[in-house]
Length: 117
Image (cartoon, rainbow, N blue to C red; front, side):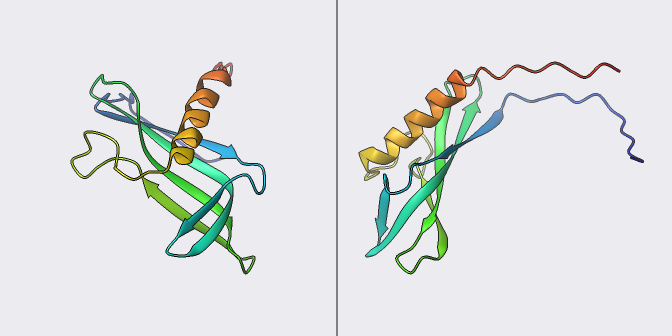
């Protein structure tokens, strides 16, 4: 492979981020922005753990089809401007997507074992 590496990585807990992807059943979520519909088929929810505080959902990126059939995306910022709470006016269904992502992250039960060296 021709790859080499040195060092001893250390993770700072100041701003750890996790991204969870969800495939959505076609037609179950339609987002409308400025009169244009997006039929979502995928959501990518970004969570952050800031300085030993509980995990917080920061944003959701939706992929979907517009009325003309083209693929498009829509990013929804979930935090208010000072980043100390949820943004006003976020539809409840988007918070349900966030809850599904949070549940999925815990339910997947990912385990990992390092390969034998």
